Length: 459
Image 1: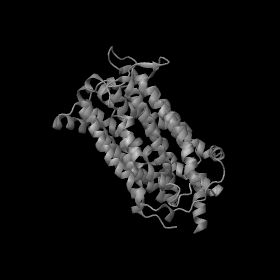
Image 2: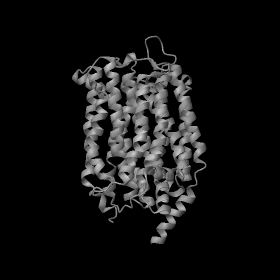
Image 3: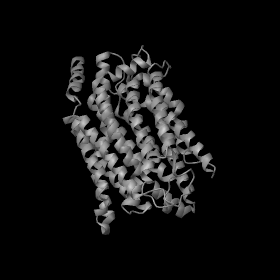
Image 4: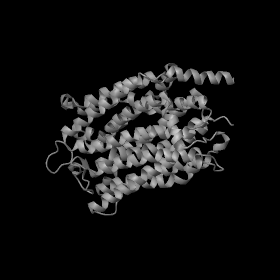
C-alpha cells in the first residue's frame, strides 16, 4: 500500500470545511431562524409554542426525531460500507453518490416556498430528516476511511488536526452569517428572510464543491487493504460495545457533545439577548473564539503527542463547564464594557473549542486501531457508527430540550425568555461536568502501549 502524503491528507480533510458550514447553519441558526426574536425581522414560518405533551415545540420535536433517524441509520450504513465490494473501495463510492444530496438538503431546510405554518412544518421535517440521512451516507464512510488510510499515531493526530482545522474554518465562515446577512440587506435590499437564504445558498455551493473534490481525486485502494468483517451487523455492534475502552470514550463524548450542543444551539441568544450585542456584531465574538482556538491548535497537537489525549480532554471539559456556568452570571458582567466582556468570554472558550475539535476523533481512532490489532479485522465503520449512534441520541435529547427551555420566562408574544436561556447554560454545564468524571476512567496508556508495540515489532 502507498504511504499517505500530507497533500492527500489535506485533500481528504476538505469535506470537513463543508461539514463545519452545514453544522453551523443547523446548530447555531436553525432555532434562531424558526423561533425568531422580534428584533431579527424574520417572519414566523412554523407553528410556535408547545405542541407535543405540553413541553415540546415543533422545531424541537422535528430536530430531535432527525437525530434519532440519523443515529439509527449510522450502524446500518456502516455495516453496508464495511462489507461493500465496489471496485473503487468500501468508502469512496458512497462519498461520490451522496455529495450533492447532502449539500442541497442543508439548503432546502431553510427554503420552504410557502407561508402556511402546517406546510412549513412538514417541509422542515422532510428536509431535516433527509439531511441527516445524506449526512450519514457521506460522513460515516468518510470518517471510517481516515484511520484506515493513516495508521501512524503521530501522523493520525496531524490528520485530525487538519480535519478539525477545516471544520473550524468552515464554522468560522458560518459564524459570519449575520455579517453577510446584514450586507445582503444593505447592499441588495433583500428582506431579512431572503438575505438569510441567499447567504446559505452561497454556503451550499462552496460545501458541495469541497465534498466532491476528495470523492473524485483519491483512489482508496491505493492506500487501504481491508479485511472485511464476515459477521452480522448485530454481532459487530456487540463486539464494539464489549470493548471497555470504546464504551468509556463513547460515554465521555456523549456527555461533552451534549453539553456542546446546548451551547451551540443557544449561542446567538447568549450573544444578542443576554450579553446585549447587536446581531450584526455577533461575528466579532464568534470569530474571536475561532481564531483563538486556531492559534491553540499547534499547542494542543504537541501537548497530545507528548502527554496523550486524556489530560487535554479533561482540562478542556473543565474549562468549558466553567464557561457554561459563567453564562448564568451574565447580570454581574460590566454593562459599560459588554463588547470587551464578550470578547474575553470568547477567548476563554477558545481552549475547549480547540481541544474538543481535535482530540475526540483522534482518541476514538486510537481505540479503533487498538481493536483492529487485537481482532485482526477492520471494523472502523461499525465502531464509528456505534459511537455516532450513542452521541447523536444525546444530541437529539439536547435539541429536543433546548427549544422548550428557551421559551420559559418569555414575554407575551415572544418565543425566548431570559430564565430559559440561563437554564440551558446550567444543564449544558452539568452534562460537560459528567464527561470530566468519565474521562478519568479511560486507560489510555494500555491502548497506546499496544499500538506502539505493534509498530515497533513491524520495524
